[in-house]
Length: 426
Image (cartoon, rainbow, N blue to C red; front, top):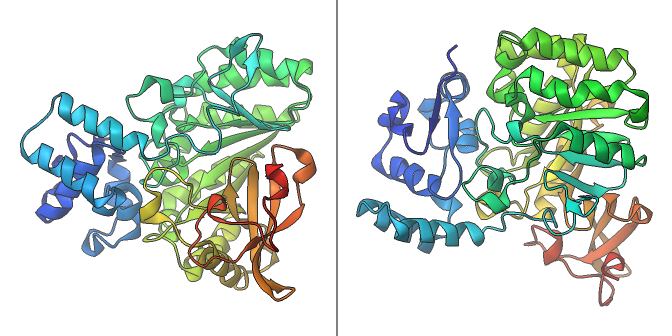
């Protein structure tokens, strides 16, 4: 299949889109001015059920929807576009709206950026003691864009928002100086848009003795959904899998962190072949996704997806809460309902699929798991705990918040039992 890409400026060249009602086409044009939009031919032809648009979950996953912007902002932008405005007025309004969408949540630019000497290592995040997130410059795009993605700020033309590192030596220097780091997570964007030779320059040297403390190499990717050919028929697919095998044979644990939001993404035979080839290298595939209104806010969807992933040899890993950024108001689900979705889904699967943790919020202090709603001393509360945290002493420590049926994120919760603040606020 040809790798043809459509975006906010040429999307009406997609034959299926040209047949959509004008209001849907307008929504794509307007929202794509603010939130990045990119879709490739594989997604258009093999994943979307065009007879079910706009409700089709894969259409919702990649195509902009009117509700992703506040109504007043959508109307302002629509008026400018109808008037043919392409100048400073349009650019200024787009910048204003983007700044209102919390482009870098959870301290990404204020608390997580490490230093090499006196310089900030802008293309890395070192939030948790054992794990370094690495943003290679060549991997800061994707084969297609998820409409909910909390990395959306990586893809817009705003230089101070983009996190990326070009220099191989800088990454290796930081790793050698921090022996507490056991896990390197290569992220983006999507590092699987990179040529294998570029990825190899970062990863192959990690088998040297000075990197023995780096035990796990994770690769965060959506390629198994958006372009599974990356692992099968791309010109350097074999070289990519040979790199995985090389790292595994030298004692590294290689984990492909695959994002699947819906079972539809697993149905095509090319996906099964890509999964088989990755697993044959000795790497593992762990799966993760957020609960998203309009896409997968149904326990049956999750149970079916987890069961199929296990049959294919993958390991369900995380169910996330939709992040507090971008189009969150369109996709977010109240915490209590998210927990109920998790609970009902996990009840339908065997122990092999109960490896999925969640629902988990990736908040400023750490990954907070919603363990349920309970009544304690006559008060209805959320039961919460840290799966991971800035302070390792907080990990697995339970805490309680006042019950709020509308809350969708940690910062909307108040401490239970009359406490003034949560223990981690102190």
